[in-house]
Amino acid sequence: MSESLERLQKVIAQSGITSRRKAEQFILDGRVKVNDEVTTVLGTKVSLKDKIVVDGVPLEKEAPVYYMLYKPKGVISSVKDDKNRKVVMDYLAGIDERVFPIGRLDYDTSGLILLTNDGEFAHLLMHPKHEIKKVYMAKIKGIPSKKELSRLRKGVISNNERLKAIDYNIVSTDKKANSTVLEITLHEGKNRHVKRMMEQLGYPVLKLKREKYGMLTLKGLKTGTYRELTPYEVKQMRNMANQNVKQ
Ligand code: URA
Image (cartoon, rainbow, N blue to C red; front, side):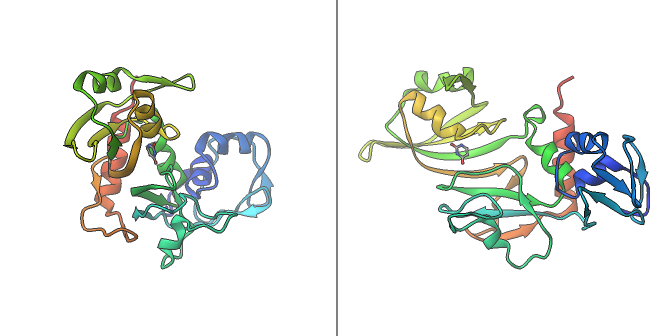
């Protein structure tokens, strides 16, 4: 953020503590002080010079940062784990900012995960209406027919939820090992989305990796390594999310 004026709820969301909508509620609930005065006015303009305190805790004004990590399997997609298992943050030990993962990958799923301290950016990418494409490579048990796979586009029901893929491709089949590798593209990311969808078809997932998030790929990264996104990539991701909003 520069010296320019920004709306208070945006600044709170950018600090990563909550979404913009919840920040608005914090303001309405009288939990936010600007320069030692409680303000309940949405849209109050603030600059870097203003002291903002939420629930008695001053906001840290870190510059926003954006990373992608090639998460290995056997790692939790969170900042801390009470059972002391490895977490994604263990792989970003070299960075000073307080980042958090954008969404999650299962413990045994590997692949591309984004981390940021920009709550607003995270919110933008995660909202299903923004339809950011995520591409997964799934090794499944069995060899499904094209007809069986065609159910993925319509969606299958699991725990009262419709789980859909927007696209899929058979990458390879191994008759001897009785397994298939599928490339599956999703717009959403419901809990265990790919695994539940494939279980419902009767072809359980043996191995899962996220290869793409929007236009971002794992190119150049080895498992367990990370890199910063370029400003151009951040801008492209923002544009992509904003373009996909259905009116
Ligand atoms: N779908 C899953 O089943 N698991 C993941 O980690 C991501 C998508």
